[in-house]
Image (tube, rainbow, N blue to C red):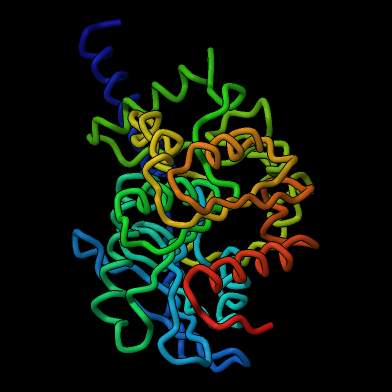
Length: 352
């Protein structure tokens, strides 16, 4: 092959590779219209928005109870999730107990603005929690008691809420449900899987190519960031495998959800270890754990409770898996226990 022919072949190959990556990077963001004011038996729900630190608009739903000057809990979804994926039943339960709730989407997720989409980053997520705190205290002070604020997180956002509470001692309470605390050895990628993550992460970090994504959820043995026996298969995400929650997700999900996340974040995500911060949390904490959870072992949650710096630290466990806490026979009891804890700690009226 002549040098000119070799150059032509290389150019064609590079062009095909670029086109393939561009196709994979296409992420259709579905419009997310603002939620109109809705009256419920326990109060009202309406859409709100507020700026992140960089000016990106964050989309939220505000649940206000039928009581004046209510305390408020700030809620964010778990790993790669959006607020329409089962946060609302918890928020409605809180409102029924006299507690306002602000559920919001992180930047680049759900109804919130931000590009590229599905940018999972604990540092950015923590700052989005702080933006929500600032919004409550500055813009919602006429509607809620902004001096009585709690944080709520589940799975990956449980770890983020925990670290945020550690940095903000004026937060009055913390509820963390199956919280990410540190990566279990069984979930750490090795061998070929690790090499694949390193390769795609390195390419994405260069930022000279279109955004590169990796699968978030998958089955054990599949190449995915968070494998679990409770997950569907990467190759058949709408198939019969996995916990019932996956087949009950809204379709289409808010903002156009897909089972993938930006690869670039994997370069530093190992540095996010909420277990190392739990001793700094001094507000009352309610830990909620699933005994059969293969992503957040119960032993880790028990260890976090023992390390917590709070004088009041409670643990509630349920005989189920990670995602069964959101849906099914345990959700009502789970939400009730959380609401009663928040009402007692924050001083809100408890109403069944």
